[in-house]
Length: 440
Image (cartoon, rainbow, N blue to C red; front, side):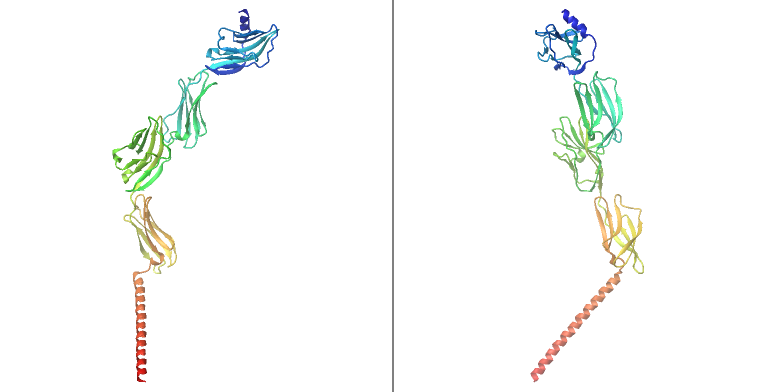
C-alpha cells in the first residue's frame, strides 16, 4: 500500500502526454514505446493521475489496483496496458514508469473518454421568394446552427450564418458544401453523424417548361424525376398552386378532383398526368409535388391552350402600270398586313409594307417570298394556315388570261379545219383516179 501511495504522488505531477481519444464502452490499448528490462530490484508501474493501476516487480506477477482488477491487462512481453470497457471516469494522464536508481518514464498518454455524438438533422428554413437564397438549419438534441446559401439547380455558394451558443461539450457542429450537396455534420474525436441533402432537392424550383396545346386535343405532362413514395408520403398534381387535379397516397389509388374526374388519368408507373380534350380554361401552371418530411417538386409546366388559327387569304392590292411593283394584302378574319414587292415574271424583291394593329392573340401574320412564290402565313404555337401565289400570276389580268385561252382555242379550230380540207381533197382525188381507170 505504501508503494502505491508513492507511485500516486510521483504521478501527480501534471504532464501532457500523447493525446488519446476513445469512445465510451470500447477498449483502449496503451503501448510502451521503449523496451523495458527489469533488474532484480526494479519496479514497473502504470498509473493514472494519483491512482496506481498496476505494478510489476522483477520476476513476479503483475498486481492490479482493486479498481482495475477486473478490466485491465498487462502484456508480459511489451508491458502495454489494455483497459476494457472504458468509461468517462477513466479519463486522465496515464504514465508508465520504471523505478530503478531513477524513475524513468517510458510511456505517457492524455486519455479522454467521450460519448458518441447525438444524431443531427438538416432542415430548410422558408425559402426566399425567388428560391435562390436558401437558409439551412443544422441541429442536434441540444444545439443548432443556421447557414445561408445562394443556389440554383446546379451550384450553391456559402453566404455565412449564425451559430447557437449551446454546443455539445467536446463536439463541433458544422454545415458546409461538398460535391453538389450541403452537409450538416456533428462530430467529436471519436464519432460523427451527418445529414446530407443534394442541392437540387432544396427550395430551388424545377425549370418551368412551357407547353402549348390545341383546344380539344389531349395533353401528357411527364414527371422528370423518379417518384418513390414512402409510408406517409403524398404525391399530387395541382394547377395554379391551389387547384388540386389528382392526389396519391403511398399504397393507395389516385383520387381525381371532381373538376377533372372524367378527363384526367394518372400513370401508376411514371406518375405522368394525361389531360383529355383540353379547353382554354385549362391553361395554367401545373406542378407535380411529393409531400414528405420536406416538399419536393418533380415537374412543373406552364400550359397554354390555344384555338387553331383562322384561314388566310392573299390578294393583290395594287399593280404598277408596268407590272413591276406589286402590293399584296395578307388577311384573316380580324387582321391584315400589306407588303410591296418589285419584280418581273421570274423574280421579286421585298420592298417592305405595313402591319395592321389588330392581330389574333397569340398568333402571327406574315407575308414573304419563297421559291418563286409569295406566301401569306397565319400561325400560332399549335397551328397554321397559308395562301400561296406564284410570282408570274400576281399582276396578270383575268382578261389577258382569257384572251390567251381564246387564241389557243381558235388556233385549234384552224388546225382541225385545215386537216378536214386535206382529207376531203384526198378522198376526191382517189375517186377521180378510179373513174379514169374504169374508162380506159
